[in-house]
Length: 471
Ligand code: NAD
Image (tube, rainbow, N blue to C red; front, side, top):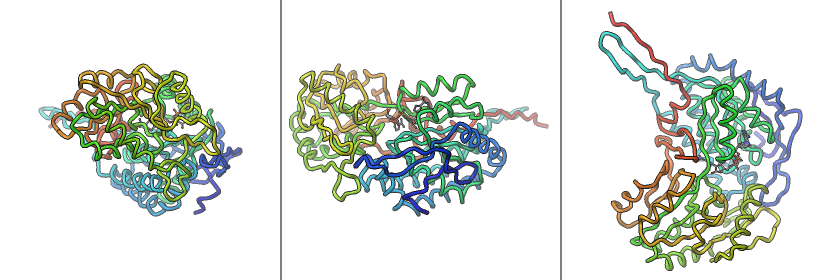
């Protein structure tokens, strides 16, 4: 399989080059890396029709066979991990080690989803037996973002297909190539029409969400787009799962070992160049350790190399695309215009490639844009707090509620704080650990519904009550 060219859509198990194509850039060089098919409305109709035609057969396939197919896909992705991760670095920008971790993690998650059983609940069994079964919904329209284009596509493909649905997957136009290759890999593994992968520009997402042949939408992206997806879904009452934006707070208590946590805290904010839904985007540090921890984080940050992800030693790559680069630069310019203190970074000179230096701000106001908004880039505000009630209140004062973390040498104290955070996930002395068996989802405007765990699997099903009168 050629990972450097011939990027085709997968429709009904076959390669579709598309009538038109659009360029995909390497964000480290801004050079054109490849051309992706620009799916037309007619091609989307064909993909949806193929998924509809494949649905009855796939839904009737024993779940053990569906699981075996997903395990085979997981193994095939792992077998192509070198080529896939190199392609991922070139189209997304992340350093090679992170790209490899994403591809391996994607294969691991796919396999992990096959361990989860769909329950049949016997809810009453006297005279009559009432059972709740969970049946597949139909055709899933899956829309994924550019920050983890491989991993987040797998979060949808695994549970949706195991539950018996078929799918049309649309990756982001900023990073569609690895997902197109996974579609190609799946052609030999899944029956035609079960997994269709289409790529296109700004029209394709709205066409998909409005398509009458789609029964369920599974969307990962920004809260702003999530609202549009839900609005569009309302017209035909499509089911929706929305995994949206975040403004995660880390709360650091005074009893941490500053030297031990500095490195972990740094990466909780700057891994993948800050382009993680669950990155630490606001770091609340107790006043007693604010100065030493600030110094330790800045000291560590100075040793991290920002550069082309394909070069040895790069710790942080470029921002993935010009649109996001401009957003992050605007937040830095806003901080400068307001006279906030920079501990490092802040240089907004345009380079070749969408590079932004690691930027750390010293206690900007709680009302500043860099604290209130989701930066999704390498800019972190460090924020001083006096007492824990105040820190919890500030952390919870957000339209978002995706995740957060608490850092302390005392587990019971950390758990007590964690229990007060209004978020879907809380980590204690850890960063961004996820599991196929754990529920992941946002509170408030960070999302609707769950991925992972039996709850995530059930999102791809409808309950059906079966009542049997006992003889
Ligand atoms: P985005 O919302 O701009 O785009 C996401 C996807 O939606 C892309 O495939 C895009 O082409 C498509 N899209 C855009 N407009 C659409 C429309 N009107 N209808 C249908 N589809 C449309 O998000 P992004 O910039 O790609 O990703 C970054 C955002 O994603 C951040 O806010 C981040 O926090 C969030 N995110 C959330 C999670 C999570 O699991 N909660 C995971 C990763 C990223």
